[in-house]
Amino acid sequence: MAIQRSARHSLESTNLADLLERILDKGIVIAGDIRINLVDVELLTIQIRLVICSVDKAKEMGMDWWVNNPAFCSRAKNQQAIPEAIDRLEERLARIETSLAGAK
Image: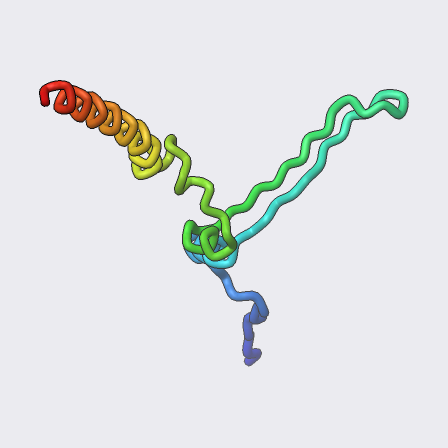
């Protein structure tokens, strides 16, 4: 009677969720350059840099461009509106002071 044993694989199997969690936790960078030349004259150069990671990892690496971008952050929209509101208030205050000084 022969005993059959299955071969063990040295690599662990992972599912898609584990793989995605690992990529977001560690981050991955994909970089590429495309150059189009015609008779030694460069017509077009495209540099592609793609970073895939979690928001926490991006902040850790110093990437936070979305924080001050009004398209992605309502706080940035409010920060742009604050100087305009201050200007309007200063103009209004100046008109009130002028009218009070004229009334004396």
